[in-house]
Image (cartoon, helix red, strand yellow):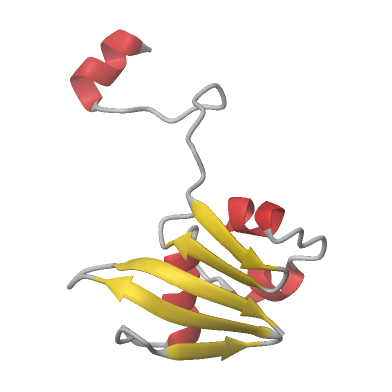
Length: 106
C-alpha cells in the first residue's frame, strides 16, 4: 500500500485512523467540517434512522455536499438551510467549498 500511495497519492482504507474534526457545543448544536462524511455525521449525532438524509442526498457523500443538494445553490456565509428538524448554518467557506457548518437539531 505504501508504494502505491507514493505513486498515486493517499489511499483511504479501513485501517487509516482519520481524526474526526467536530465540536459538540451542547446537546443540540454541533460544528462540523464540510468534508465530514455523512456516515460519520450520522454516528456523531447518534442518528439511528438516516432515511430522511439518504432520500435527499443525491450523489453527496459529505455534509457539505448534502447541504449543497438541499439548498440548490452555493450558500453564503451565515446562510441557514432548514431540513426537517435540522438547521445547517454556513460558518465558513471559500470560493469552491463549504468548510465549516453549524448543525442545530430542533
